[in-house]
Every structure is written in structure tokens, then in C-alpha cells.
Image 1 (cartoon, rainbow, N blue to C red):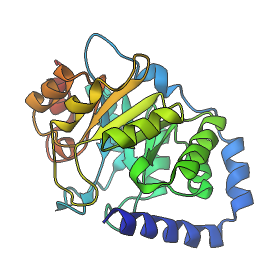
Image 2 (image 1 turned 90 degrees about the vertical axis):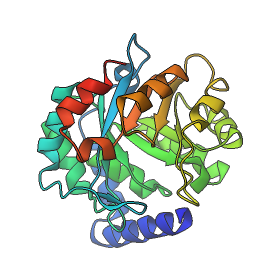
Image 3 (image 1 turned 60 degrees about the vertical axis):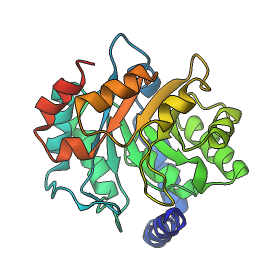
Length: 256
């Protein structure tokens, strides 16, 4: 599943590149307003922080919400107390787009994450050109030289990088490139099975000074509390917000 998602995202990026060249997108990335300081926005605090996700659908659950107005939803997330907004831009399985990201960036004042299957520099430049302050890199999807290269490129453009892991080995690889924002995803991207305890098993391996993000398997405030007790500084939440009153749900989660 993961390899198919990456291949599809790269193919779609190549289609966009045929219409908007690499040099044009690179220039737009360098000309964009400076990225917001996402590491400061997500730094550990007395209470958990939330990255709230604009997510229409997923391979595991199908259609979750229509979300005709992603910018309006993002404003609701900010009103509810989210520290950052994640926007799924993958179009084949998640029904997202870079236009969603651009609309959200224009509507909120908190950092915005481009959530996609990024494997090539063009996608990183696209993210910055569209206003992303954070990009996602999935360790399982990339060999180590590519992971390091894309991480360095993102950093050079002023963006933070959420480096997503699913195992102790992947966590070691993330730390080896100097990642300062590390996610542990409870969802196995090969089988799509969930393991809510995975974060707690890996959290102690994440050194002080690295922001720890728990991803997936969040339905209730009890799930957020579970991750917080396991050492999460930040929890990324999508499905639970797009299928409920986002402001009320966020405020319930942020009590943790």
C-alpha cells in the first residue's frame, strides 16, 4: 500500500511538473513569504498540543467528510486551539490538493503542514511555494540518502520537517539525520493495522529536545490522554475532528 501511495503521488507530481516546470516552482518557493516557526509553535508545554488535520478520505476508511471549505474548517481548528493545521494534499486516496493547502495557508495564522507522500525535491519546492511551514517525510518510504537530502532541502527553505516513523529502526534513522520533530504513527502503512501502544514503546528512545508527535488511532479524549501519558508533546488528529464538531472536540482533547 505504501509503495503504491508513493508511486501515485510521484506520478501526479510529474504531471504537475509538465505543466509548471521545476525551475518555476523552485523560484516560487524561494519567493514565498518566510515559513512560520513551527518548532516554536509545537514545542513542549504544560498541556498537549494538537495538529488538526483537513482530511476528506483515507484508504482504510473511505470517504470521511466532503469538506467543501477547507479554509473554513481550518479556521475552526485554529479557533478551537490547534497549534498547527495538517492538510492532506494527496489526491488519489485522500481527495486532497495543493489548492486546499493554499486556501488554508491564506486563512490561518498557525503553521501549516503539507501531508503527502513526498519522495522528490519537486514536491518539497511545491510545498513551500504553496505556503507550507512543515512537510512530512515518511522514513519507511525513503532510502536513507533520499531521506537526508529531502530533510536538508526542507530545512534550507526554512520549513520544519515532521519525520514519521513506525519502528525502532526507523526512529534511529530519523534521529541520524538530525530530526527535531519526530512522529510515531500507530498505523502500519503496509497493513493499515493500528497499534496505539507503539508510541509509548518508542517514546523513551526519542531524546530530550526532540518534539514527540503521536499520530493515528485517536477517537476520544482518552486516546489523547493515553498518548500524553506515554510522553507525547503533540498529537495529530484527523478523522475524529472531521466527523464531529471540530471546535468542541478540540477543546475536549486540549484539556489533557
